[in-house]
Length: 312
Image (cartoon, rainbow, N blue to C red; front, side, top):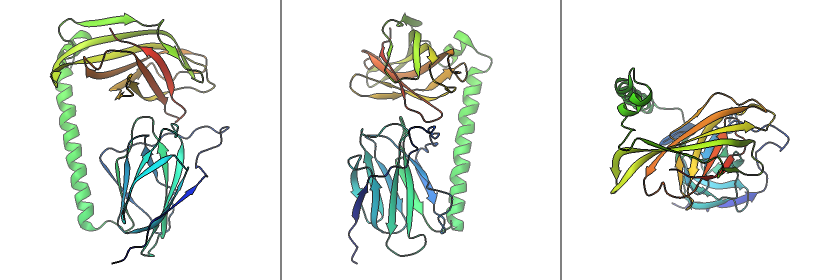
């Protein structure tokens, strides 16, 4: 059976707001396989799909594609353009929070004849596979979706019960012991206020910074695993409250470790100072050297970068 060749049409128009407008909030990125159902009338706006520079995102369709239109020349590498799938790898030319339109055209002529997606550059995550359908769910598929949802809820409930049983009534050092985060040697700390710097363009500046290290007692690949934490006192130089949404720690070899958690005293009002804490886990070998902390806010604005982070 012959298949019409796929044609890549590259445009220059981007779907992000003008620089004078407030940035749109980042979408929630789904882990695992995401399922999208397109309405025949194409209502509801363009579905948002999380992408990240260097990570591939594959869209799988229930029918063959005839062509696509992707805005932004040089911003993507098309790793694969199959008859029913499309794999894109964004480049570092894209900035956090940017929204790039992708339009695909279907070969069979059924409604909708095309679909437009908004590819949103996320600071640390990407949706690796998105399955797109144009037909309503069948009874069997809906039952399978319900079964998976019940199984995920059951697993989450078991994990919640386990954590509550381990940490019930235990705070402070006892909580660390219960979670096996206080290894031999206790917790080491270091004042790094003089070494931490912030980049031009940051909304946040740092006045105080202290780092911590604890041995978890676990071994991976022959190397001990350590838990690291960074506490900073930051000031909001912007005109709106700043609320953290996530963080990554970037190593000297461009390796990224996603934060296990980000703690703050609450939204940071303009002109005010608040404490903020970040926690990561890596091997003892990986924890050596100097790192860069990257924070991003819930409003989807540009990232906040702090260089010169070290751990004891």
